[in-house]
Length: 331
Ligand code: NAD
Ligand code: MG
Image (cartoon, rainbow, N blue to C red; front, side, top):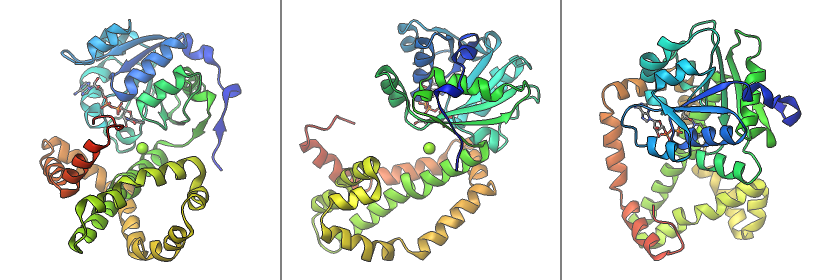
């Protein structure tokens, strides 16, 4: 079983005694910066010239400077720009201003694990990865609680990398929930696998195929949308609250019997073999290499896939039906 750290395992004074530079002020960046500030930490935000986030950070009273200046001025540098630009931000602004007294931190292991960023050996390198989107990291903190995080240590030059990382985790509120120990390798590979096979890729492919089967069989697209997409939220909420047993307890016995007897026929041994291949491509670096090259070329295939997905009938039908549901926020 995984090692889990709780409040008593962290010394909050380690991070309040340090200057922390948050590079990027997006989903995670704003939440880390504000939570740390509210925990009494000296925070600076690093943004490139012309960043649209600058005004937001300054409106919160945060000090904003260039990523290079923030790196120079900070003891701990947390990199929270998108994973696809971390390599170039590191090379241009962070690396020239790093020295062995500093700690480099991440919220996802991709760039370290796949070698896009190789910090000097005398720098501590650690990860605190909240298991929630940034707005939840902030909301839950303001509410007096915290979201769980993962902690990992890539380099421990000082001998204090874990204690410092846990203290940072306490600063963003995660010690109120608990922090689970992992490695950069495990976090990166399982994160990619989860989003590819279930959370993003698996779910959208399952829904799109089911929608097409119903529409091709002559059913109305509106009805198909409700049955295979809209109601997914209901089911996911139940899974989230109480696991599979609770979801099955909450649906009808007819639905539960269909689940046991038909589900494994749809997502079958073939899907399992494909999942294993997807995992192999993550582990051997094939996926990372492909995605890094795609970004260097300006994302031509990625943009084409996005455009094609956006023009699918399920999106038009969905937009129309969601328009009827005035209780939904506009997205
Ligand atoms: P994001 O896309 O929300 O925000 C990135 C921010 O970086 C932007 O708002 C901007 O301030 C800055 N930025 C954008 N392009 C830049 C550029 N070219 N140069 C310099 N700065 C630039 O990113 P995010 O989702 O907060 O992700 C940050 C890190 O946190 C990633 O490593 C990600 O994997 C990790 N993470 C994200 C989530 C999540 O739910 N979003 C959860 C856990 C971990
Ligand atoms: Mg993830």
